[in-house]
Length: 387
Image (tube, rainbow, N blue to C red; front, side, top):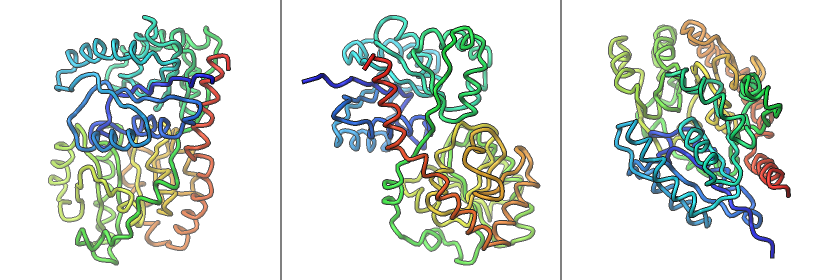
């Protein structure tokens, strides 16, 4: 009997929705949907955060026969944590001996490159999840970008904009091996199954007729949330009952709370933190709003579209793959609270148009189903191994 191909998905962690985000979620979903008859899959996390969410993911993966491993605990001392993660991942990977190591997000990419260079992985695939990598220290990105095309056996972009970004790297052009486009994806059946049918407005004490907007994501600079918070001034002036839900956690949490207080918007903006019922919350919105400054291909927009929730998003690479302005949603310039507010108001004032865009969006995203995407990854893995 032919041995299954051993594949390890390397991520920073499994505290998805708290510390970790869409890149880690995609890696987990990919692990779940690779053909178990062909692949022996494991998930290796650099850091453990002692979070109930990561334990829930571990149980879910174990039920599917997918082993999860945590290299070390995160202690918020980055340099020490990073070194410890590499030192602990190294022997774990030698024990797992994967045929394919697939890395996701910046930290895992960097560790994965070192592991591949030292022979701990037979082949390495690097999945690029964003058009901006290492945004807080471009010096690191400039150094790593010279290395990845030579160490990784294939670079994959989750959107056409990411593929273009990877292809413009001088080292990639010299290597003469273009990045592969395999889009980000969701599991439609699982997303729809997460709906409980509960009246989320009643649970949150929000009136049925109140215009309700929401956003789900890490509270980070990338998500552009200060512009959304400021947009609520104009929205509330026109629609006094309007409410905004902010779902998620992150390093900018305290700063955003202070901005809401400073703007006098505490009565209409609610921070809900990470939620296990995020799908129910998205389904309850009059419009989902993405104020991001950069993205790869945002999973949460895919989820909103699948649920039939109208979408307002910033006109940035990645989001443009999903939101066709006026057809599957509304696009506005990034960093523009006034334009964001006008689009949000339009979704409320033109309900028939909002419903039509939401319906079009639902059919538009059929190409982003995880089963299709996992099959494409399976073909790539076999191709790299000469199968």
